[in-house]
Length: 555
Image (cartoon, rainbow, N blue to C red; front, side, top):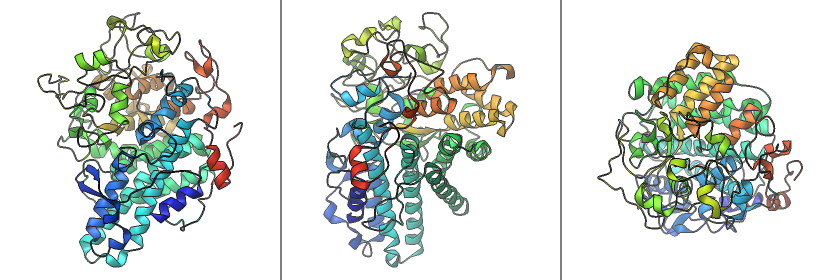
């Protein structure tokens, strides 16, 4: 743990005390007394050490800290959970949604666009990502420094697998760090104790992380193993590579479309057979966002594993203010929670922007009726909500935008029917029983199609991939003449809305700063262009001052 604290201190992050121990029953990650398991215990019980400490690494991707204590100092713990920290920076400044509550000033400010370097939501996201990087590195170093304690082949195999998983999780953090901050501090297991993580060029960071992921995938090719529910493995490593290669031109200046297609096609091929038309996709879109969606995750009980990377959040075994909790309760009011969504609370904090809403496949001009099954849980003017966004004030919640809700806290079958006779558990104030899908196979299909349209594959194959997505949603298949980069961009928006891809996508499309606007963009009611520097966030000032890093331009 000294390693973690020294790394974090070297990059200017203030953290609460971090525990390194937990007991684990699959993914029921409940923290225990950290004094009970330390690197010194490794030789006595290698398997126990790896299981318990790896559980704490995963726990830091699901909740805000062991024993319900925030790991991020001076920022709301619930808002610093991994998914929610990413959601704040990836979705709130876009056309998809906003945060209405002025009580949560950092998030509300993001809804209007550029924020100062002192914005605590940016601080919280940066801190969460770097804390998780440090946890992964600390685990890898502990294992590598105690290899003498591995007495059997089983121990070695377990150590290799645990190290691979931490490298994948660390790479996921670096996708968002590179994405949000550009030239980032880079720390891996080779960083010595007390050393300052060097700030390296964005393209260099991209190369290091993608090289690590490619090596991990190759290791899985030679040492295949059965995927475990709630853990990361080959599928997530490949999925992250697809995300990196899709955005390579933004991150490095050099496109990698062919690599995107190569990895995506390999991942898609591994999943073909079950599911919608043999695609590996769930039979119904909203199964991915139902209370029993854990069955669709890698290692789950359903042979269709559309959810490549899942963050377990099922109440009451794990309680999180990120993921499914914020992605359901953030949209709805208490009345909807009680009477439709099987939840105990609704926060009334989020609404959809009108321009995004009108991109959906509505059958009428009023945007109330659609054959698109992805919109089944939306609340529209039929339910008393207005499509316009006049103020972004929480007091105007019902007249300030539609509710773009995906989650519903009931089980769903392959035909898209909710089982209303069974009520999965929820907390009377907050938590629900849906896991959160961080990465789905449908994103891989759409990413491959986009790369193909950039010349890395056949437009015919791209059309086939996109039509699987459309037909699964209940929409008509497109003809070849219907498919272009422009129409694909909107279909990607319809499929992946609010899943932490929108800002990244708009930057890649060249529509983030100019060329497309929406209500309240850059603080203007009818929308205005963002300044170019807003393609990157500012490093928190304490990081710059304490670690001596170079701040991003114009902050």
